[in-house]
Length: 287
View 1 (cartoon, rainbow, N blue to C red):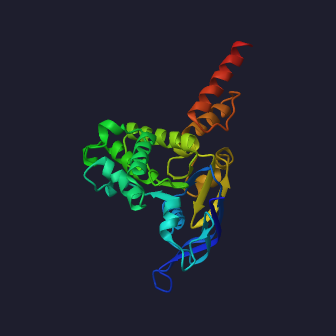
View 2 (cartoon, rainbow, N blue to C red; view 1 turned 90 degrees about the horizontal axis):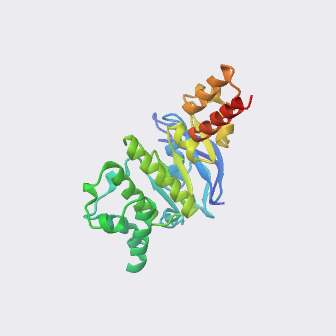
View 3 (tube, rainbow, N blue to C red; view 1 turned 90 degrees about the vertical axis):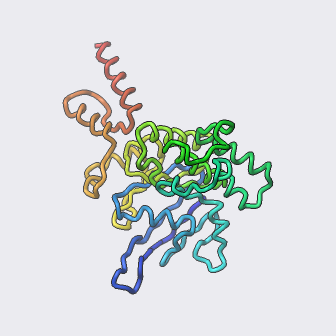
């Protein structure tokens, strides 16, 4: 187990007129190798929760244990926790600051005190994992890159730290469709190749359905669902009640079913829908 969250509550501005409870009695365990989708409308507590996972916030009460380290302890090493948990915020390209892409990605590993050859290997590996060509791009300024490339370079800087858990908070926000596909494709490859544990925060039900093998649903600071994507998306009325929904393809398949077509209406990805429709068409040919 990488993360163990026990009875966590968090209050912003306690004891003031602006006091607000952001997390209420959260209990979650995250095991190695999971790909978790974290969803919820704005203000549901998603960002507050993920900031607890690398010690940016500490619980008002309860415990967050990261790879055996309790973040609430007075003598805890936040640096050690942040080596274990990499957090990529929205618009991470705003944090690019070095003269070259190489220097930007190498910044974290160098601060770990690693030798030059190890830093070099980590930069090359991180760039490869996000789909950036090392030889042609390493000496270029990060500010010469496209929006999608900048985002990937910023993610590479976190990956180069080799965290056990990678948190991505709305990694495709503001990108065009091509940029979105680049980022999501890179995340999928990273998960498959490195077996890294990932938490993806997203408003896109399509992205979550395509990538995650477990979904956490937040509402008003509470964890209201924790299940496989198929089980979560079966609960469409409950999701709609809290301002969420299901993937568009799921609604499409349910509509087909309601029109009398004998198809599985628990489909959650376009790939699954394609297979199901082809299966249905073949069955009709056999009649």
